Length: 202
Image (tube, rainbow, N blue to C red):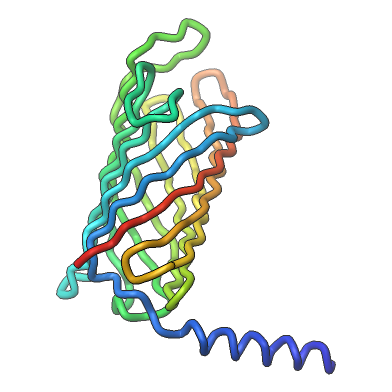
């Protein structure tokens, strides 16, 4: 019981120290790099822009461009382009918030792979999740559902950030995806890990 009380005390003190939120009414640009896919090295990176939350409607917009098979943004094989609009269920100053969103998964494939049924396509994304926004740290737990013409995909993308200042932060993200293909009833699990930096401004 003593240990439980001590743990609760530490959590309360820590919560108080970080209870001031970072403003969501800012533009931000982030760049991340991924190198671990399942159990092998596979270079990826993403460039993402996120708008401020429009206070009147509690909506923001983001656009992500991801390139595959390269450490740079310029790929000769594949890109993903993902614009998403999110509606927040609580005031943007809330420490914990929830959102729902709609977006597009535009997959641009520049190389045909005879070993897999992969081609350029555009499908809808339904997003939902929660965020925690504190003075020095923040986290997000989004879930994306993609609807393909021949299947469906579910992804969770937990991310944790540390804010060095009001403008600069670093983050790490883990992505776990499950794909089900209707035609031949195949299933695939995919794991990706990323680290990145973010710059924010008003």
